[in-house]
Length: 133
Image (tube, rainbow, N blue to C red; front, side, top):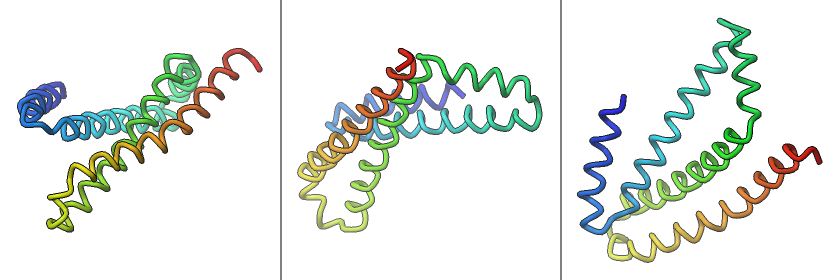
């Protein structure tokens, strides 16, 4: 399980040297989402196979470290979706590759525009929850 991550990271560093950090970030965000989905599916399936473990997992999910993890996951999802859309558009319209720098800047602006309010609201709700407000 760890070997593909190491290979991906090593290839990403080599590719980054050619100037494309977004490629590496897209891969890392995709891997993070897949890891989350694996844990989520396992945890939810325990409701049918091991209810006690499922209840313990639900209690664990209500802790501050998991709240931070939710923020990270939300950012990864937004970034991955926006950057994936940029990639798809450039692949479907090869003539636009000459404008890839503009597309990259635009995708980062859209990611920030979507992520900042989303993460702000999520963080506010988590902080309110943990402080008992």
